[in-house]
Amino acid sequence: MNILISGGAGFVGSHLCDRYLAEGNRVLAVDNFITGQKDNIEHLVGRTDFRFIEHDVSTPLFLDEKIDRILHFASPASPVDYLLLPIQTLKVGSLGTHNMLGLARAKGARFLLASTSEVYGDPEIHPQREDYWGNVNPIGVRGVYDEAKRFAEAMVMAYHRHHGMETRIVRIFNTYGDRMRLDDGRVLPNFMGQALRGDPLTIYGDGKQTRSFCHVSDLVDGIVRLMESDTPFPVNIGNPSEITILQFAEEILELSGSKSKLDFKPLPQDDPKIRQPDITRARQILGWEPKVSRRDGLARTLEHFRKRLACV
Image (cartoon, rainbow, N blue to C red; front, side, top):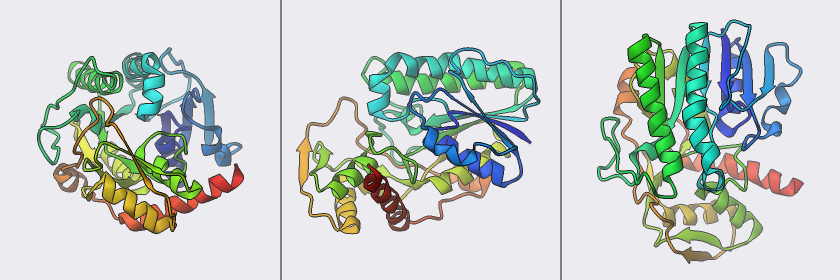
């Protein structure tokens, strides 16, 4: 198949490029490098089954070739990025999604939207199921990302219902692995970078808020299965193994052997207190569940960051 991946030079997008190429497909990656990195796809440049276009999908993209699948992953995805780039985040979630849906319709391609657990906001139910509508502050600082993704989901469902398009929606929970940026701003690269440098680990609030971390290899497997499934409705993909931020910090310190201290700071506005996916739908529809344990995945990722720091 011919696969188009917007945000193809990003953390998850580049892993999807690898997976689809490994399965014998041809991949067209599109990215404007606003948060993606050339290093993530450098190993693919020169392959006859891979092509890259530098382009901002918030503006229309016109292609002559046949496209079978479009995966829309273009978007800033960490608080550091979308707070710095609020307008771009809103545009790629709205205009970018519209443009990619329009291209998919023109090509007769199946479309998958990368949505997020952030559509649940600061949830009032736990764990979070796909039928939960969320608790989101639309005018808060995080609203630029949360509402961009909520709008994107609404647009995808409108194209599915009105135009009869084949569409899929994945709600991605906290994901980690190699190719994450050290300056990503999310808790895992923050903790690992600080631990490896011997700096204090920054904990926001009292550290009792929870997260659930899924290794990128498990996420990619779930996404590929979802794309080839027949469900148009959102599916959570994440690891339901829940841990407090304080416990997570202690785990990173143990794995890294770091003697770093803990530095407590005020909790940012609208930061979710709990985050855990209910993956019943993924188990039933996709036959999917995560395979990589957090300890094994963290050990692999820690080694990745150790090498990155050694090159700085």
